[in-house]
Image 1 (cartoon, rainbow, N blue to C red):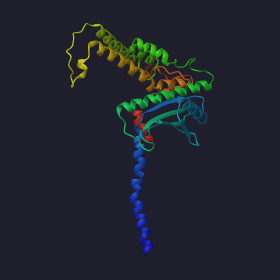
Image 2 (image 1 turned 90 degrees about the vertical axis):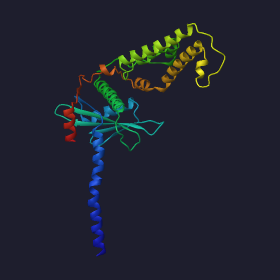
Image 3 (image 1 turned 90 degrees about the horizontal axis):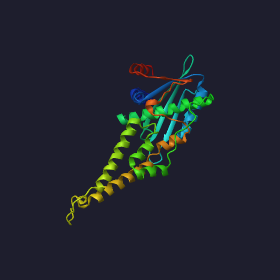
Image 4 (image 1 turned 60 degrees about the vertical axis):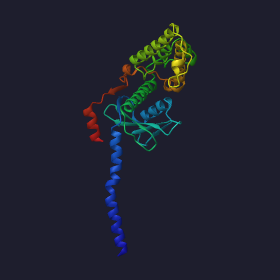
Length: 295
């Protein structure tokens, strides 16, 4: 009798726990559906060959690992950040069509290996940029496999000595030197930042040569910078501006990573995925809703 009661208790627990067990994967699936997606059609390749191309492009783009499932319809690409616990992942789906393969890349940030955070507007834009850069690398790798490279050049090098030379002359010129070829920075933003920094530095230089009045020999404990002369203030501003620019060169290594990949990347506004072997699929809101219902 006790065994029967125990069996009934186990059955009741399983039945009651089943909705909760199903709800967790469903919740995770719903969160993943909200992540940005980019899709292209690839002509002249089958799934196993295209999976190899995706893996080759990921390794050139400095991703740490690529996991391909046996049927080759999904490819998981992972990049870890050694300085913290974050990871960035791209999940690539390969769907066979009548005359092409539909490649859908879906990116999502992991703040920790087992968490899917909510999106902010800035993070969603950053995620979209990562997807577009990776898919553009894949289109170039496809062309390389067909012995018809899209470009005969890579991103131009940005070494420290030329950068520092422009930086000492004017930080605005150094900013333009770094930003003009960076695909992640629009040309309008590159021009805007360069003008802002250039004019700010010119203002410091002008302030340095303006005549100033003698200051009283007393210290201001609340506002100590008010005891500095205009030349001291201008010098401090100009040196600080150049120091910040030099630090930014070493901190921001995204451009150098793109350069090491060997691929060429134009500005996002000029980036086209339509080539001889690929075609971009622009996903409308209705298509995305239909895709979510289908999944």
